[in-house]
Length: 97
Image: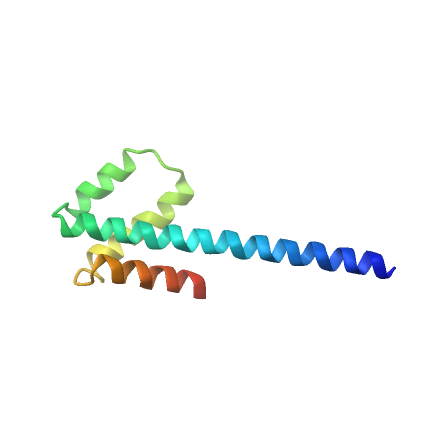
């Protein structure tokens, strides 16, 4: 019985660690995406052109539900924030969620 409990605890710990690693990679991806969007903004690409170019890539719906609002935030709310700062803030907000 002790062996079974230890096995279940080990599996649970492994699953938790795997979930944390997946979450960390996702948050890094969000930060990188935010930085790239902000760099495009700073290089003069309009919001609508960026959205059009992004939609032409035919990404998954799940990715679109993340990236399109991110583009909106970077071009409106964070329009005066540097790409590096946006990346850090987005990644930290993701990790806190």
